[in-house]
Image (cartoon, rainbow, N blue to C red; front, side, top):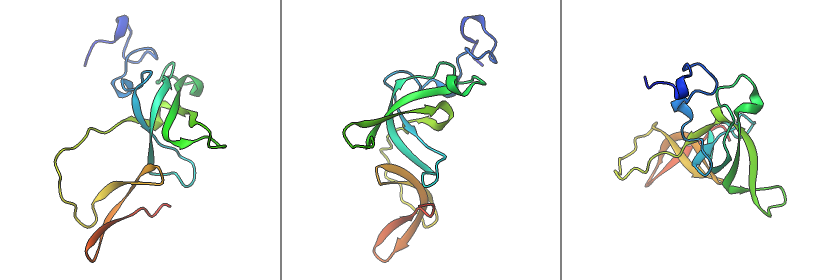
Length: 135
């Protein structure tokens, strides 16, 4: 384990936590939500303001401000910006150059309705499809 930042114990709320190293201003992330209709979906975003203390027991200190890449605000005039809890953000997955085949029943993320939705691969005669049953 790496030594904590500035002599702080690893449990100190200001200690560097490897889980949140991707939460710096300008970093590309994906955000999810617990809201009905959005479970198992991830949306591309940019961190505008990182959380003050991602490990804090206080929710407001764990919040980051993100701007979504594909979601618009209520009047569709600007990209949507909103606070998101640090635990609801993940780094953008690495680009995969290898084209691996899929099998029926594989769990995959499919890009649909401006986000990535988790589902299972299904086969229809002549083509693949994804079942995202939570929608």
